[in-house]
Image (cartoon, rainbow, N blue to C red; front, side):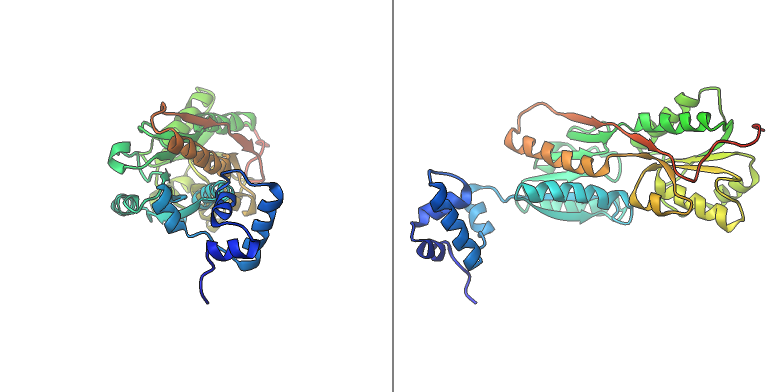
Length: 329
């Protein structure tokens, strides 16, 4: 079947090709009645805008790239939902890149796709990147990144760590264990510092182990968990917390009767766990939407000052944590 052209639409609507173009691009002066007739004909004929032709004519592809560190982490699809929703409403297409936790793949994929005329990049860096905007060559907004030269959107994770610590204190926990995030991650450090500052000298940290954001726990950590007398374990993200829940369950420990567990992020899986996971709620989809909006502002005004947006967090108490029923040890 031959592709429907703008000329076909103009002939069906009884108007000029220029008038159809004005309606499609929302330019020029066209009466509402005529515009409605043109839109009806577009729908009847199934006309689709030739994006390549528009890009050659205007220099705009209405396409952005979304680069994520690892799609197996539930945080990433939630970010993608926010970006996709905002982009779709604005008429943009989104090209998705998954670094699969591989820094070399991340860098190579971004470099390759940046040469193919996207208008910008929304990026959740795998690590704390030293790239500059000039090296990437297109407008960039980074999510959950620290110390970069791009516009950034992040949640107030330091406050999130503080909320973990305050929940521990409120529940009467005085001896706890921590599963921190990877040592290279600035956002993991901020989460950890917020928690440590909040508990001060009120809570004794029996052990503190830094691990990747994974549910696969080191055997030594599991042994430490089982041998210690902590009444609460806090983690740097929900995936780690799910790994803790599974390890405790496999070894006959009850949550929260024997030990409480607190996560961080509030990915959808957190509410589906048994017991449901108490956790810090990040506005993950909102972070994605905000990043796209910030990218559009950067595309329209490349020379403006760098902008950083910090979104508030919340704490969600579920069944994995509770008030201690006995005196602290």
